[in-house]
Length: 351
Image (cartoon, rainbow, N blue to C red):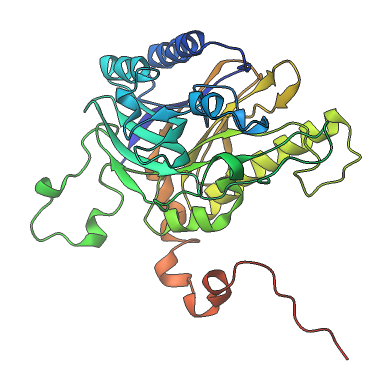
């Protein structure tokens, strides 16, 4: 049975350190209206959507750092961000949006939430688990720093899939299923199963597989990815800026396409892109990928842009029931290293 929905990635171009929040918020609301006018039911925004990507800066000024964060547990009620959520509710459009979260006890996370426009509330929250980069800046003053370990702690909510109501027409509900129906008969017939991750999480297949084991049909991922930062990557340091950007875009597409395929799900990725402060390059590449790993839609710029597609969640069934039928093919007895070991431990040297 078709389960078609229309989804969008809201790519956001350059936001400078000096850009005021009001102008950024106006752009985000403009993107929401643009997506809604094309029929989007769900709009995905980037990581740390409301400000420039501040973990690149080195500062110990508590007031300056504090200003980058949203405070409290619910960003839909924060003065800095509430207008975006209010507009999503007015339009009955769901949004997923990333931001820097400072909890009531003062803990700092790199966070995103899923907000139901129809219900007017946050349905799910995710906090970034895989924080990249370093805690201290590089000695090289010209290096592009990635100081998420300095400004955030790793997320504590895990990778939890959830149902998003109101997206799929005529979705099977718990109280409407026949009393005698089995779990096998209801699989793939309910509301959309959604999971969230942030930026560097997409590089770790464990994150995708945990969501895949919960039957995820749609993975949402906001990101800020440098177009040139040789200190952070495993590729050659002598690449030109142009070569490095091409490589970064390739790796981004590789992650989204391969993991969507291996978990038989759609994915939506939304970039913060362009040249922040006119010097810090971020790739575009916002995309929508199908469960066979094909690119359905992709950004054509590094500016503000809506990437939109109609997708059919029924397309997830092919992989989930055949090639990647986990219950039939997975062999957990062979995967002990995955949970027993964090770093690399090589076999002993030969005699």
